[in-house]
Image 1 (cartoon, rainbow, N blue to C red):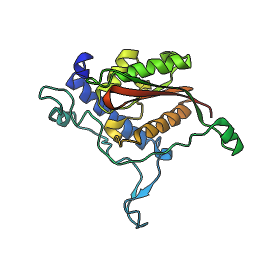
Image 2: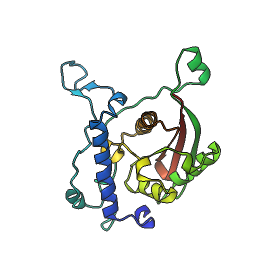
Image 3: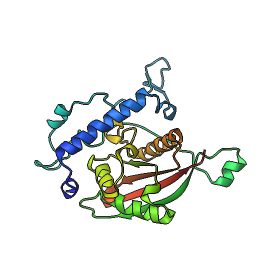
Image 4: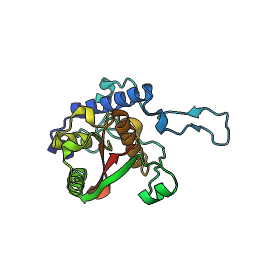
Length: 232
């Protein structure tokens, strides 16, 4: 329903999946992700077992023709497939969040601050449009406009969500999910938000940007949006 409402065809959704994989692969190859990752051994009990040092779901050369053969998952004539949706994967992420007073007391140098956060609910059938409402609320609370935001991270739970967001707010391609998203990297529930915020901050620092916006759709038609400001 979301895809048809916003005119998102199967071809457009599949193309966004290809772009997500290619951007993630390029970011990994360029070394932009390495400092965000903690290396783990495949067997925690065996320090000599192979090391996992990169996200394993990313495909450097996704095949558009193969994507086009995948069956729709929600309706026989639908446009959402396993290929243009987030991957099922394992993962974990962590953030260090503290008050300014705590950071000063313990000699910690803040890298960013929360400018505003917002939660919204929308149509529980369509589900995913609440990212639009939560973003408008977060922008209003912050006193910023969409043009003040340097980078956007919109979770790719399904390929149509960031495309809808991009269409609604007129976001340029080079400011949205610039290092790929959950269609390529995966979407382990409970860790994706921290992963996205980490990538958003690192990329703001790399580009010298000031404001970043992250938004994630949630169950039953809800969503949250967070705006951060780079400090370091």
